Image 1 (cartoon, rainbow, N blue to C red):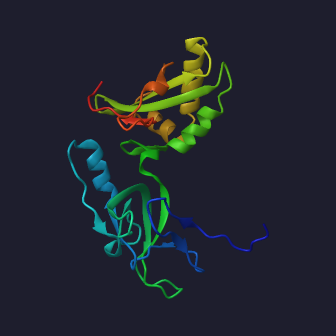
Image 2 (image 1 turned 135 degrees about the horizontal axis):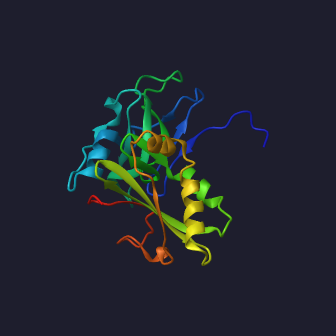
Image 3 (image 1 turned 90 degrees about the horizontal axis):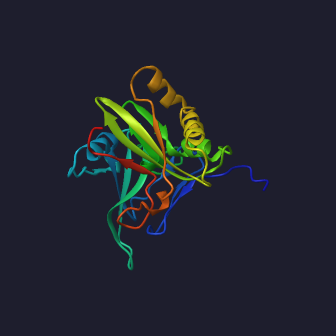
Length: 229
């Protein structure tokens, strides 16, 4: 539209105000006068995933260090819809808690991705966004209508299972092979397989996949299984 500059802006329906860039464009300012922002560090998020019943602590964002990463937690006192330690499921990287060149002393962050959009295979991590692009690109023997990733372990190695629902009933061997080829195009996963850090992925065709919902009624694209296989 002929704009000289564009600015990042973040908000969600439950939050009264948004986080936005200033003219310095070096991170989004988090407004301390209308909210109390906190961060759950990535190490605690990993522990929460691996240890049943563990409740990760949230730390004041203004006490964080540049480069820290974790989940953003927000508290605000809206008249109709106040939030207390609302876990946003959004992963952030702290840019700085020092005064910005614009003069504001507010913490600044950048958003990385949703916490449930990152598949954790130990030292290997893959993006669901990148995987979706690869699976969406499948056209033969048919397209992929929906899919789900299930992460387990085989001995000490992470095992990635891909449950795929084809758009039409096709020969199982061809669809499994095509889906596996697509998944293994992820560079980090391929490196993990080649270096013996993760198992070869398993692909399974599931025609009732859309019926496998969470207790909240939402489809879960990523499931961590507790027991070793």
